[in-house]
Image (cartoon, rainbow, N blue to C red; front, side):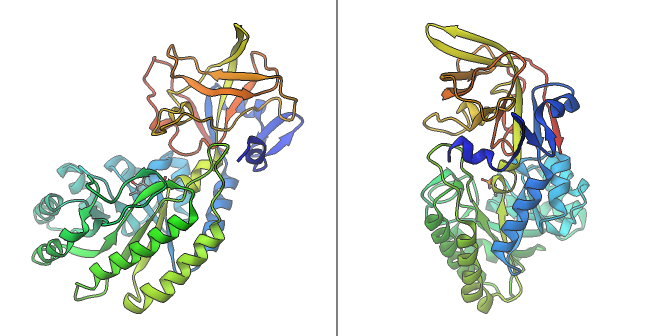
Length: 408
Ligand SMILES: *Cc1c(COP(=O)(O)O)cnc(C)c1O
């Protein structure tokens, strides 16, 4: 997607980008300092509504808190989704503080410590177990507390989903129990005082290829239904994962959400419901819900020419927005959409690189992009910055202050 297409999600007042109803300079004044992150309530609300419309009434929507754990964002989403997925005791606390009922908080992740298991069992959340050893520890924690733990088995599939930005299932994995080992584990769980509710499978992240997402959903349903069939009672929880990506780079195209949704609805009607009439069928999405609702706003500190090349130096950088610098899982560095938010619509003045304030060549926010002529004081904005931004960045690197985050 081209930068101009990304900009269509926003209003523009004069030459200023408008976020959350406020022109950018005023928003910066409100924030009190640059750099800052701003997340739009309206864009979050609209995105959830379109996902719900696509999924229909029979598929539950989960939000994976790790994509953006800002408490106000989590609270906004908690009121609009069915489940919250957390991956640490810290995220669990944010989810519960946001008012999410513990009954619909699911806790995944390898290496949950005994202390985290204890907190989660006491809270009453659903634990997605990742290994036989974790089942042992969970049973011991439940016994010590006198509370029956709620759990689902996270399955490491016997298939691989191609086209994911990050693969988290198939082959050897730290995530989930290998599918072929699950039946024996189910016997083991049945012998303990553990409340098994169902299964979870998350095969990968940031997938823009709809056919592959749909194929993965079908194979996930087949596998989880076959495992659920080994149990005496119907299951209450079937989490099919998610993995829908968002367009970051020029060649990326957005997924056809209605198409994926229709396919999933049909799959649930045709395959899941006859076998499992009452299970909560859950799709868990992180970046797809929040990524496009957020911007990272920096101020131009310096504009310099070096041997024919223009550098715009801003007061932010990779310590807040690592992914835009190309250092968060990308193999080939490509540019996030970056605009001068105080000169929207101006003619490009030539190839420019936007660099952050850190003293390392890694701190490159945009490499040779067409930007209008820019002066110190202008605000440069990284779009698609609502997910895996601040909390997925090395904030202490170089010792700059942390940025403000606003939900507007
Ligand atoms: C990270 C993660 C997600 C969210 O991934 P996105 O790419 O942000 O949608 C969902 N489920 C699990 C288990 C995860 O670890």
